[in-house]
Image (cartoon, rainbow, N blue to C red; front, side, top):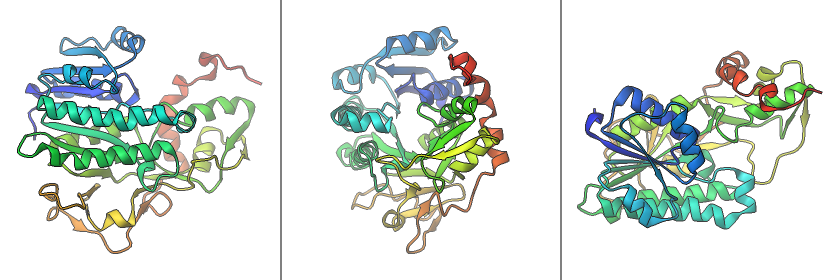
Length: 340
């Protein structure tokens, strides 16, 4: 196990949903020497600080991942980087494609360059199931970012810097989640869904953070870590939030899939299965990243880890328990929505 007490950690996108949960858990349970929140929004940093994130080891660093010089400055003396900064709203990325490319691809490249230049030991990037066979620009930028991170291990040569990725599904209640939308629509007695066949992988924010921490501890460099997480049906989520409401099917949106995939058939050939996760090893002729080969089970030909064929499913009752904490947080009356 890693000794976190003497580690200096930087998290990009540190004021986002993941970043705040990561900061909370790391400070409460792991007590690093220093934890740096790197983000571009001074207001969010101020709000985070006054809401209780004011630990003596916590530092707030204003900067943008598009600025490689600022990243170099921020990574001075840093041991671990968790790269969570991204533009992630699918419609916004479709409408502003160059902005998504600048942040998600070029920004990730800047993180790599700065980490190499400053001698950061471990760098872990957050990815998404939408990066597998992407049908929208957000997924395409995340696929490119994954490739950048994995192949950049070759640039490290004899240096200590190593890069890996974590890839998981939809996060309950994070920014852009459908949960607050359904909670709002519940007031009108009608919920809109794009397709009643749709399925998604699902995990909580805390599960995502703890998986990232574990992967930082265990990474060798070159891996894409994917947790084994349950699937859910969108219609079951709607039933859990508003069992008496009518469902209106409005049609699948551009760039949206019926089902998501976390490990594709082609990736499965170089993937190792462990009890609670899959480790996608680099398929290229890299001299590292294959340490997992004998740690688990190789996957059968044609294997595909998809949300519609997942053996693990959430029931309506289980979904209700998971979303219960968000009922008060997204109370429409507190958000200014009117019943009607």
